[in-house]
Length: 305
Image 1 (spheres, rainbow, N blue to C red):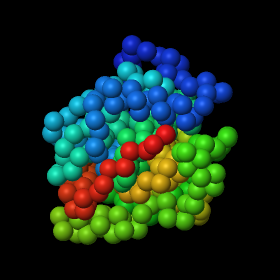
Image 2 (cartoon, helix red, strand yellow):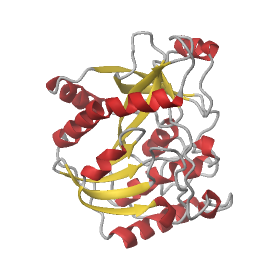
Image 3 (tube, helix red, strand yellow):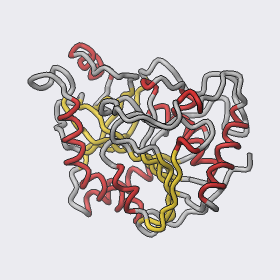
Image 4 (cartoon, one colour):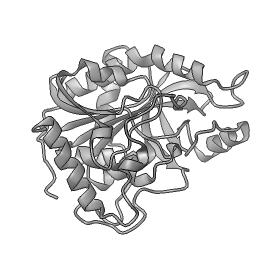
């Protein structure tokens, strides 16, 4: 689950970065990639990180970091959610060159799917080959508890939309991308071994994506369990669809911050969710750091667009 909106203002409203409905998606990706390189210099990162709720601190561990705000790049929407910095950060971490999205934007903030997923296309255009996606989520499986980490083996898309709807640009990916292995089994097995070596408790399961921003009802949580979901959240699914569309290999990790409605006592509270996310940050950071360190060296392959 994601924390509530913050009250902070931005120099530019999201609408200033919105790509019009008739905009050419290839041109948009070219323009934002060109602007990112102009702001950051050469980017040679084969590993991309999406730092969800509670993991923003990883961006401050990156050595030789170069940063640019989403608000300063064309077409990117600035994040309005507390805990999401809204920056692209590149540099050296755990022996690898990485490009990190410090925070994400969500459909429920009023952005369309193209804006929600454009940062993923930007990473792919810059040469990222492996994408690590993290999020905070609510437990659907009764065996999970707040503070648990979950390796995402698959997902269910109940957002009511798909970021690939509309004309397809072959330079970005195929019309009908295969999602049989949306989450790379080799990467998942590596994360599992890292967790075991570091003594980190790691569950595995299916993540279900909903739009939000309201939490699920108890009846909806029961429905999700029947459908096969183990955790539920308001992000990630569209990002992974676009990542696979552009040929990226994906590792997905969830931090369980709360029990789904009806599985525990009392009402769901954003403050408690954020507190659990902060408490689990150290474990998630150790896991992601160990995973990145254990990755074999990867060639950077900037897209020719």
